[in-house]
Length: 237
Image (cartoon, rainbow, N blue to C red; front, side, top):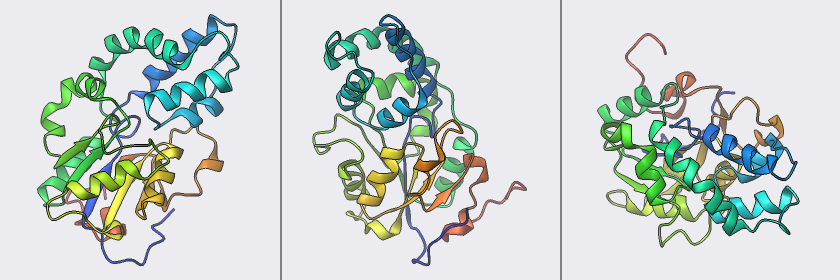
């Protein structure tokens, strides 16, 4: 899907993190499958789609209610059960294909970037442990437990907070391009008045694709010229 935008060129970029820059969504799936198995329930992608991108407690509430175990397990207890395993998995997080290339390219061309993630600060530190140098290229990071983020995605709070913190901010929403993989994140960006490139997991139902301005199967497929951004200088684009 080509960019469906005749707006002025993009000047700033905001990245989601989980499932977009870092291959961490598989960790959540693994742990949540284990927890539901204790209650003879199965974890599927229709439930995962509703949880993705949200603040931890909001995703936990969806998890226990939608799976029908809220009478046996509270959202808070679910998070406690999940935490120990996740803390061992997060430091092994790997980059998604094309993430390093795109971030380094935009940085080299002087395009200000930041991360807006529903992750808690302590989880962010664990997930990025192996990737400090790459994430240091971001102008700033807004996390899910930031005091300015009153509500998680699909509320626009996190993206509006991110726009404020760029140098010279707040940056006009029309000048910002957001990269997301989660349906709630795409909606949050649109609710903030921003353009969105969606890079969904192939297992995500295609009914969630329609809100995005551009749909890609990988960050490797992104063509900066579609958005008035400086083109790649290598042969891939």
